[in-house]
Image (cartoon, rainbow over all chains, first blue to last red; front, side, top):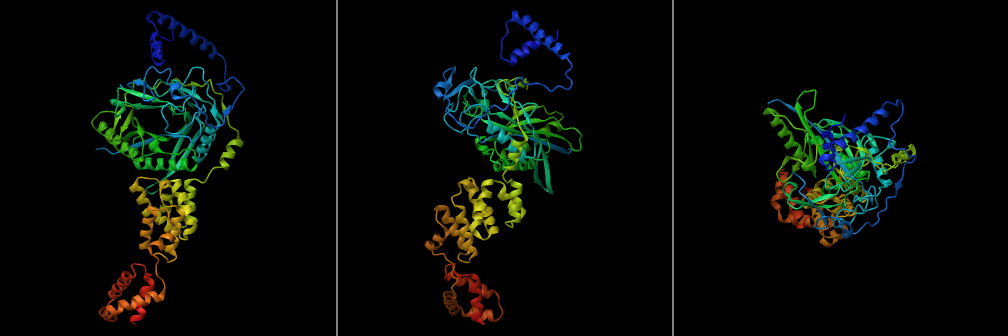
Length: 95
Length: 480
């Protein structure tokens, strides 16, 4: 086992996900399955091959620098749980 | 106490002067009601897709070339993942391991000559939104209101090498960088509006040590003054810590300008674990030589070149030229005023003297200076031509600050023309000589001071308008 439940807890915390106690084992196992598959790929000899961040043969998809109206403030705030002075109200940020 | 060496590196964020945001078409205009320059992309709505603004790449190349960097032909964007309310998507689109520019430098003036400060890298990224805190500061607020107008505004982050050794060097670097970004017109560099922001990495080590000390990163440096004060405070704090047997913790601290100190910023966020990965919603950017060459050929004159030009073409001393080119607006004003002045050094003296004093007093920039450059130039020409004395020019200057009138008109209106008409001056000279026989006797007895007194009397009678050289000459002639 490369990944322990502790690693899963840490990653869940970084991703703001709550993992129910009973599913911890299952997630840990699935994490490890993914990493084991990566291990298989790592056995391939990739010497001299450039990393491939993108597989599509497309580059330079640009927009011209023209400003256009977006949505109204009212629309923007429609899903906000709380609103204050035209902004999304959020709880205290610093400890 | 041991001697310590300070080590400083700066990270500068510059908002690019585009019309629209980096990955959507929303306006980048500063201000505006909260959340009115927003759309599904910059609000982070599920399914919304970013499309890169071509001008962002253009500006990043231009800034990179102006800072002597190598432009990287293959570019990709990466996601920097973290949760913070100012980030609508919970990731920032940035460039991680392959920034657009590498290995540049800026030369700064330090005591005893030039010093070269390395520029490690420049990368493109998007700005975050703005938190408006309910209390006076972030630490005393129960809640904040998030405004995403700024979210997605394009930035370049310019990272320096840890090459600076004092607050003065850091200041000189930031001033030079700001000037270059202004001259290349990629950023409006308004620190008070946050379009140019600076973080400082600061550490101390015993003099002669081989390894740098542990650094603290200081944020919230919104002015040159704040940068200098924060560095000085932080260096003292770290030295005190080390001297008293403690050690510096690697952490982010915020500069509290009101209290004049840096404070530890314990964020609710986890330690920096950003889990960068390539942004799958954007395709790579591949630059060709033609693009880079074109930007290089279109590069405008940079501050160092302009300073050189002011020295060789306008005959200014290096120091004066350096002060004038520090802001592009001041240099432009200088050029415009010189057109009809006929005395470039005098224009520089006015700019660095009375004009700068006025700007400092009013707390404004040269852009908002009420006197048009052609009017300042004309005033200098009037002085040079002997029409206006330097003393009365101060009056004209004060009037021009109040009303947009040409100095020629003002000289007439206020009756300030210097009198160089020999007949008119001779009449006053005769009058003064008749009233002061004792001074004539003193002069004849060899008392040189008498002539000064007589000149003063003539100037007084002419209400300062007589040409002093001519007064002197006529007095001597008539007394011999």
